[in-house]
Length: 343
Image (tube, rainbow, N blue to C red; front, side, top):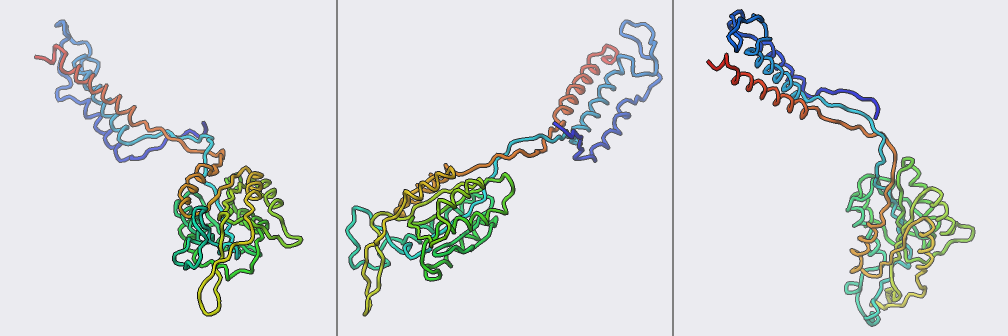
């Protein structure tokens, strides 16, 4: 405890203190007041006589009531450990493979199914997950990085998750050169988190189907995850898609055919790089499992512990009010129980 100070919130109530001397006045101050045993009064003209003592208690009650209404408060600084909401960067894969749509094991291949009837694409599923997370207001600041062959900072750290969510609709696969540079995308996100306060928790959410295509000489996902660990940034990897992915391909003369996706998602690699930073891997195969994934992710949400000074206050009003009530009770007891005042 340090810097102990006393604050006055409502000083106007101190005008009630002027009633204290009024409470002590008596219209016949110099009159002789006999003692209870009938002997002569030796304390004429003072508050010392038992018959006048109730006025002293009344004045004290008024004084304490005025102090209670004025609201005196003790204030001090205390070093405490406080938890903070993290700064979060959503890293979204917008490569060509994210246009694939996944079918559950129980369903046959899509055949001649139209896009309207097909399940959402992996990119649509990832966008929905990012949008819901931003609307839940679970982070202090949000940022968004989109990547394919190279990363692009769509939004720096901002406090409004809903604003970042509105930017998702602008992201289309056709806007990016095809490729999947996961390591470079993580590095871009780490640079974005460089503006976070020291000691503030930071988290990176990686949404991808897990197949990395790092160019020769580029930063690998493993190297990027080591950088994240050095910076104290947790990576949660969300693998999008299942084992039955199909790409929609337009044919001449109109129409649509579905071709099976050639590459198998590399989710084991995503799991490994997230574990390096103390994070977790989550699998999102279809839209129906999205609410459950968001619930699991919230349970793993990082929370920082920062030692910082916190101002504490203690209101003295209740103490003064209780003391005023006690004095008022003594005043009543003295006034109505004294034999001289009963006549």
